[in-house]
Each structure stands twice: as structure tokens, then as C-alpha cells.
Length: 405
Picture 1 (cartoon, one colour):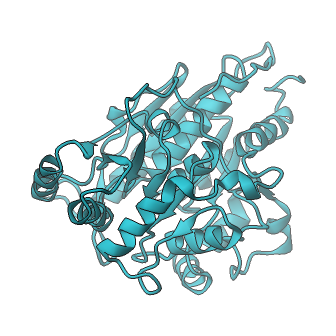
Picture 2 (spheres, one colour):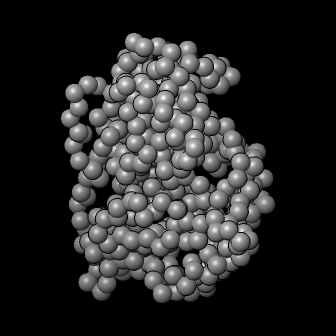
Picture 3 (tube, helix red, strand yellow):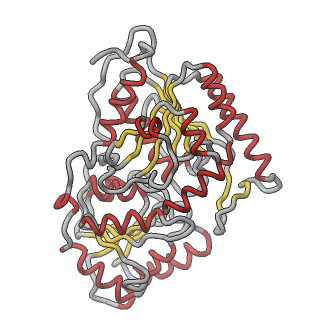
């Protein structure tokens, strides 16, 4: 990430920021929270940030100075959308209670000036409510709800938020609501019965720009990047790409495949055997902590439709083909369909194109010649981090923590 200009703080004390990222599945919430924490601490001198995360791979990421993380006990999301504890012999209720206690204790000791909650207004299974009640009563911490550009189909989301009490929590606790996208592209809150007062607290930040950690590594030949994100549900994407290279011996460019940390075990070994038989036309790694650098050197991207990957595609202006998942949420499909409609990418649609080797071969062959997203870039499309930092300053000025620029 590019070094931001550091702004002075009040001589009284630096700002203390906490970010909650429940991370029951995949890498998206943790990566977004890490990016926000990095930007805030680089922008506001001497400030610090602590990320509360349930991600089982949080320790595999590097964190910049003044940013740390606290690992919450893990939970696993099943295919039907339900959850179980990651620790055998522990039921989900006990795990949730333990997580809630750890969050409350961390907040009591860390005493944040700002708490940024990612996506879930009440936290996983309501685990954040005791902490929100405490902070509301004390009145010293500014509370922010951060929402990605797409959450789910409006009717599905409305039922989910009603069941979780999320609308009431949003109305009651949060000083600001940040939406990491543009309303002109999609409104994730459509269909939610939020009051006019709550909607007045909404701020559309734009997408969160990514920067490479270093220059792209020099390679002898051009390549496309294939990434299913965290990989937990990315086997279909990887299989289709391998089928394409297996069935068309002249297919190019070469592909660099990053499985993601959650595509592992026997499934991974079977795919690796197929990669080996392609004799260098496809290379693979399991996990890459600096995906931005790898992506910046690619001719194009074959990916799923997660928020972070989409931001990377926009940030590095790469032609992309997105194969979105449709379960357990329509989030990725909605994002990919809207992006295709606007000309930002191409979508490989299961019902329209078919999930076949032939369709993937065509997509890969056309990828280097596909239009880049910059053709339809709009003002403010990638202004998310700048808007976030402006909102941090506005929220904390009232507490005389951030000095004027």
C-alpha cells in the first residue's frame, strides 16, 4: 500500500481504533479490516488499531506498525449456511458466548475512540450486543458500521436483518454507516426499512483502492492470474481453468493459480496432479499474502466475484472474467452482473454461458484483448480510503483527538 501523508494528532493522546471482523468464512472481512486499519494508522500519526477477527489464517498475514490483531475462537460455515464451532467438542452457543466475552474484555481494556464493525450490525450470532450496549452507555466511543457494496438479494437481506435485529441495532448504536461502493452502481440497503435519520448517516465512500506492496516481479512470459479468493468454494473455478488448458494444448497465455488457504487436502492434491501434467503451462501456489503484487503483473484475471478481488481488478485496471458463486448468497452474482452491465468486466454466467471447458477456453483466449475497467471509470470510483480517513477525522474531532490538518 502506498504511504499516505501523515496528519498531526492532538498532543493529548493518539487515536485508538478497533475493528471487528467476524470472519466465519473466507478472507474478505479480515483483508478489508486490515486495509482500513493500515490506511488510518498511516494517515493519523501515532494512532493504533486492533483488529478482532475469527479468521483461522490471520497469523499468516503481516501487519504494519501500529496494527495488531486478536484472534477470536473460530467457527465454520457449513454448506447449508449454518455454523459449527471449529473446536471439536464445543457447541456453537458456548463458542459464541466465549467470543462475546473476549470482545467485551478487549474493548474494556483497549478503550477505543472508534469501533468499526464490518458487515454484521449485531456481530456473529449477536455476540457484539453486550459490547455495543456498554459503549452506548459510556458514550466515549464513536461507532461505525461498514458495509460492502453488495450484501445479498434485497428480499433475502430484509428477512435476515429482521431475524437478527440488525435494523434496530443500526438505528440504535451507529454514528456513521459507511458503504464501500457507489450508489450509482448498487445500493446494498435497498429493501431495508431504515429510517430517514439512519440513511442521513450513510456515507458512500467509493471502492477501497489497493496498491502493490512492491514492483511486479519480472517474468519471462506474460501470464493471467487465476484466483478463487480464499478458495473454500473455488474448486469449480479451478477445475474449469484446468479443463481449458487440458483440452486446448495451444491455449495461452500461461496461468498462475493461487488456490487460497481454504482449498486444501485431497481436493488440492488432486488438482496439483493435474497442474503437474500441464508441464508449466499452469503454475500454482496455495497462499499468497501479497496478492496485489502478483495481480499487478498479470495480463488479466480469472476470478470469483468477492469484494476484495473486485477492488483489486479495478485498482490495477485489469481485464477480468468473473465466475460468481450463487450460494449461500447472491452477493457475488449481483456484483458481477452489475459490473458486466457497466462494462467493468465480463461474467461467465452458469445459465447463459454454461460452465464448460469450451466457455472457459474462449474467456481465456479473449482476456488479454478485453477492455480494461478504466474505460468506464467514474469519478470517486476508487476514493474509498480517502473518504474513510475524512470520516475518521470528522468523527474524532468532536473528542479533540485528531487535530486540524
